[in-house]
Length: 291
Ligand SMILES: Cc1cc2nc3c(=O)[nH]c(=O)nc-3n(C[C@H](O)[C@H](O)[C@H](O)COP(=O)(O)OP(=O)(O)OC[C@H]3O[C@@H](n4cnc5c(N)ncnc54)[C@H](O)[C@@H]3O)c2cc1C
Image (cartoon, rainbow, N blue to C red; front, side, top):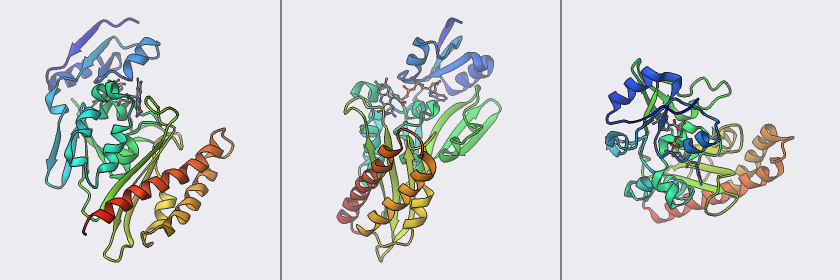
């Protein structure tokens, strides 16, 4: 099958009409950094492409009450340059800053990273740790979905052919909460990440861990919550003692999930290093801020 047409989407309603008309024969293109590879090697063969890269509503970062809403066609560069992500959301900025090269960050979008659903997608673990939700639309209506539920064994929550990912939203962390991120990649500049870890940790007045969400990338079939380590750390005093507890519970999760795979010994060790870096990120924020 050859590509018949590329539509330049001028508005969301026009894109939804086109998706409804062409369904499986259509593919959205945002930055093109993933899809062009698929088109070139014949892995996907749509009849039409619908370009959403010039729709302003999909390319903006907004604050509404206590939430940040990021349009799906927002690029990594836009996120890296936005000061909303300078303090306790620095883990998200770090994840975006470590994506590919400057050219990839200028073109690649957050929505493309999620819709492509690679286990190694860098933006996903920090967004899962933040409890992010996806806003998805089609002519049939709108649906909201927790990002962590987008990934499951059956893949039955994924975007349907007529659906557009509109935006990603999450609650702005409170002052006593901070997001950390760490990535171990193969090559420095253009690494497709091998393993990533992110954690949102909140502490109370006695410096005990009041709330925690940890998420990983490339440590399973898809990005996921690491609930065993969350349960092991909740209520513990936030100091270097948690590193030992985290190491043993993360490794116990790896033993259940990865044993027998060629990457098992590497990833079993890597998660410990990743958690140590995430902890250092979290600690340097708590040391600097007056709660
Ligand atoms: C050299 C190189 C290095 C890279 N390095 C990294 C890296 O370090 N970390 C990393 O995570 N990724 C990396 N990537 C992968 C890629 O850049 C990212 O996944 C990027 O975020 C994809 O966004 P895009 O806008 O280019 O997506 P596109 O290629 O435009 O689209 C990707 C897929 O998502 C669909 N899609 C896009 N937007 C929407 C939407 N709003 N609604 C519905 N469907 C949609 C498209 O139809 C397509 O199936 C790299 C890629 C290259 C080529």
